Length: 386
Image 1 (cartoon, rainbow, N blue to C red):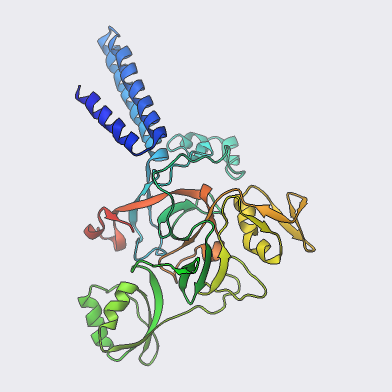
Image 2 (cartoon, helix red, strand yellow):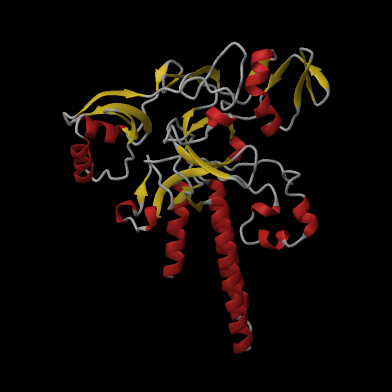
């Protein structure tokens, strides 16, 4: 009786979340559970009954774990410093797939546990590099992607390479970056105070500065002496404001990138874009049509070739998609512009372009636990991510 009450309550909660597909999945597992158990209890042999029940419970638990990992949540380990001070190396994060809606598997290799079988099959392994087996499908979620969300996604150049960044521009937005400040639709993006940039400042008393850093528990800050009293450091806004309080720190200025010839995702001959000065750029959205010319071809060819299922090329000023001459192109899905919080130590959309909706795995819900710098961090246990 208690089991039935709990199941009914869970079913009501799922319905209140407005996720009818999840309610159907929940109902299916419930019917299978009670139906199979009823059949097993009708068996007269106690030994067979016990063996079948153990096997069924194992199989059901296995199926639920696979379904939960595909549809509800997943776990990932942070491997790099690109999202400091929001996420640190060795953070284990919980990714919520219900927020934006779970992406259904596009090949057997996307199915947890079962994919191991396919990795032992040589014919199946050959198909990994050939792309997806099935069309992209995403179930409904509880919310839409918002500017500032931190989410996990597959890279556009290698499916198995998983990344996590902050979304700074949505599909359809007009983005530009001016001296390191991000603007969308003429509004400045309000960054969290964990975002890090490179600053240059004068230090009159370096010993006093080190003592101040120690007292503030900011020992991880690495100072680089440029000459005399001039130093550089990568700091978050919080760390910067703490240092500004001291009289021996003066002339603080953010360091802006100069022209980077081969690192930005697009190279336009008449525009010297850098990571800190870029745009304006219109982020592609589903149904957006662009006229094809020198600028739009350079801006969007990578997205079309890697994520739209077409191959576009230019020959003597004429544009071809899959060998057919075209004058314009209409995008098939939404895209997003992703940037790492550690602005000077990250490769992000400024370097490799837009992230398509089909590559998104889920929103970072929280840090489950952290072993940053090989030490368990109690202050990061179940820490929510903004």
